[in-house]
Amino acid sequence: MFKEVPMTRELNRLNDVFFKYLLGDEKKKSLTLSFINGILNRTGNDLFTDLEFLDKELTPITEAGKVSVLDIRARMNDGSQVNIEVQVCKDPDMARRSLYYWARMYSGALHKGAPCRSLMPAISINLMDFNAFEQYTTCHHSYHVHNDETHDILIGDLEMHFIELEKIRIGDIRKLRKSEQWIAYFSHQCSDEQREVLAMSEPAIKEAMNCEMHFTQDEKLRRKYEIQEKARRDYISMMYNIEKGREEGLEEGRKEGQEQERHRIVLSMLQKGFPYETISQITGIPAEEIAAIAQSQARPIKE
Image 1 (cartoon, rainbow, N blue to C red):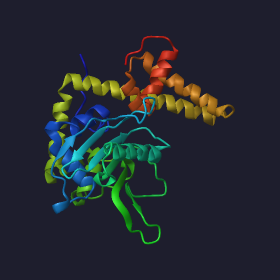
Image 2: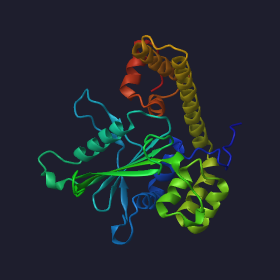
Image 3: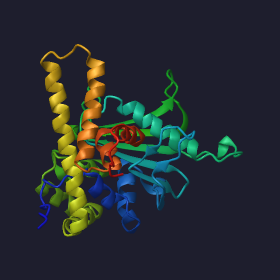
Image 4: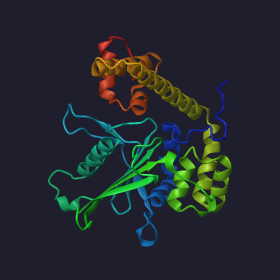
């Protein structure tokens, strides 16, 4: 019998299956609105009041171009687009990757022959389960395009948010701002008891916790969740072995060795039956590269 995921902090709320169940469902878009408005500190007349979930795949520029698949992508009631990305494994190119996705989302909204003035703001929200900005002690960093001298914003169309979940300092749970409440909810730093306190003061968090109960009672979702968790654990273990090998002095031929190890990791996960999409989400390796590795081995692999 399939083991039920316990309703404790052991539930990984950044798991791709759970995260999309919680914030990527049309039936629960009020939760997505609460999350987006909270993270962006929107209040009053600035609040987003509705959204439409969009296709997460960004069409490549050319037939052979790179395909970008986003976690959650939505068009808000004012025409702005919002992309929510989750990263659980450290990515040294996180900033470039996020900017690339933002650029594709922004430019992709301009239809052929349409004037540039029809472009609408694009907002990127990145939840990271690791520290990527060592120079900062706070957990939430936002970026815009502005003048280097006066700091005037050139245009408000670019807005990027990076949230390092490990850095949140919860303190008095009852005094957290809306954005901090959502950050705390997803962070491993937050205990179940603290989430219960959050739920008493924030209806959206209470609804999210009710969704957790329904999620753990759905056998198909739990199975998908466990597959994703196993893939993540395998990847972390493999990456640990790579780092351990480096520390032991395997520096000669490092680049070639890294590429070989990259292929080995993909092949190992393919042989264990993980689909391309799951491997790509866990490792950050594009699906087309995974397909090429699979084809090079001349064995049928599950897509």
